[in-house]
Image (cartoon, rainbow, N blue to C red; front, side, top):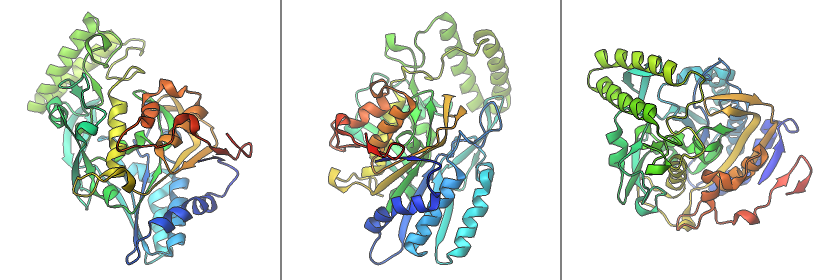
Length: 418
């Protein structure tokens, strides 16, 4: 692994140096290599401002990585730049940031044999008003389809006390709980990442309300096609086996019951239910969260569900075949990561971070090890971040086979191993 100052290298030269051995090793003998480039494209704008520098992967980094792939393969490659943003994100507005679509089109013009795809992996888009989903629209799906990957007892959610009480992304909680019960824990992965000869992860270095940080490991939420298959948190508080809130008082209980009824009404009769839910939400937020500090929706350090889902997705990518079967530990997918910390994000991440001029890139071939370095750079104690510490757990499908206390990293800022 390497820690690289963001202003000391030309990004094209740096990407070419980092990726040359990866591309060479993964290239098939008799066809163009298929490389997936996976940025963090969570949203087109932050929640409270129109800023985006601390929100999504730098368009400059994405552009130069694709340029380097074109040069390394001499245009004999299929490059799929893809993500599944939030269901209510504006995909075209994301691509407008830094004029990225136009820049990638120029790379394709320079290399006529190169095939560049820009793919929105979501199967559905949502239209929201005042934070309430008022309409759902079908999206153009991944041209390679989707695969259900069942991790079964290998899932971090196997035996979890939240079974039957998981919250997904949508109002219908039955969906997420049908896909995660007993020894059945499955995720709907997009076919394009599963088909790749080489997966290049380009996450953003920033904080996350549910997992502490979002970097390489958490960025794989964007390879799934249906976010309602993803357990985000568990109803209740730690005292009753949940992690939605630290404690549940009477007002919290009332809020949860009203929210559940309003969401059910919105699903069954959106023309009536959605306006009522919007009204209830506005009134409730004014009464129950006047200072903006109320913990809800699993947005706190005690969330014991979301990190498990994120690690499951990493195992699914690294070890699943296109038909959903699982490979052995010795046959993991070729993978490389460059974390964009040129401008990092802190505070109310992942969707409303404050910009931090971190001026750093972190590169390596293992997501757990990269995230351990990222966490230390951000000032976190790794043992306080389950998404990172548990990525080093012993497992027959290991994310990392290196012990955390044996990690070494070359830090170019001080020209020494740390």
